[in-house]
Image (cartoon, rainbow, N blue to C red; front, side, top):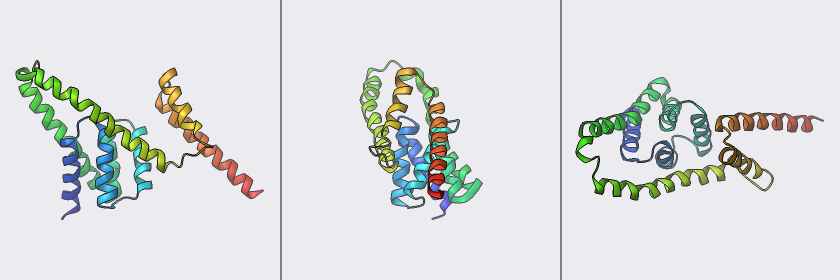
Length: 182
């Protein structure tokens, strides 16, 4: 099958059947791209996910653009982005056309109340997978703990946490290189 058509189909399917947005899509994208097709290594996926999270815009669209670009350059990124965006656009268009018909429907409300816990699980799975691949140990466990506390309790922006962690990693790497050289 043509890789453009295949990648469009993958991202269209994920975009069409994932409720909960970008983070809920992450394990599905990982399963399709890393596990099933082996187009990208696990470490590369984690790196692309980190870049997608720290880039402005919608996470699912960002990750699809980065994966598409890694696979087939600009054309690949356009195809995967379209595959991700098109289902949401079509669903929102349909909802807008028929919203008045079911906006106060108790059954629809109960369905969405039931879906919410599943979405939480879909978000939790990639979080734990990323934690494992980040090689967290007893010496660096304080970094995600302090980062989470700064965000939750003190309202720090995740952007500043990412910048600080990147700067800290850079400085730690320089320190380790100097220690090796001396």
